[in-house]
Amino acid sequence: MKGGRHVLRLGKNVPVFSALCMAVLFLAATAGTGGAGDAAGLVGKNAPMFSTIDLDGKPMQFAEVLQASSLVVLNFWGVRCGSCLEEMPHLSGMHARYLAQKVKILGVNVDGLEPAKLKSLLPQVAAVPPYPLLVDQDFKITDLYAVSAAPLTFIVLPNGKIVYQHEGFTAGDERKLEEEIVKFLKSDAVGK
Image (cartoon, rainbow, N blue to C red):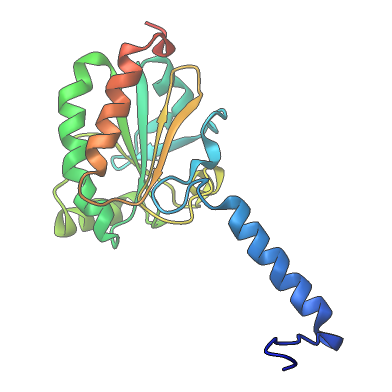
């Protein structure tokens, strides 16, 4: 220390210091662009199309569901995810409230379980919701949507455009999701 000031001598640590500075700048630049709750990475993009089966083994084509709906709420969830199980009754309520308006809620399981196993396990951990639960045994859908944490919820319009994305669930998040559903139902975006 000279004259009350610290002197930083980097020497051989210049690459480490540079990497650290770059990491800090990257984090600062991306702060506020999502974070927990709003990982807006796919908003504004076209939803990846997929086909799968539901818990009863019935085939489902996502493109066909979109065409028959005013909008789709696509929710990725897991059986060991407390937040996911807490969110399910809220999604069930929305399913009942907006079914007549052709809002479709789909739950995609992220555990990689076969349908029979998932179907037998679900009643042990949660009330079985009235909306379709889809199987993603090989994690293809999970990969298409870049799911890194559950729950992860999207709103997709009939034209395939993702207009809302939310990661996680805490009490009150269901109100924001429902506000978004109502907003898009009232807009011209749903292609009435």
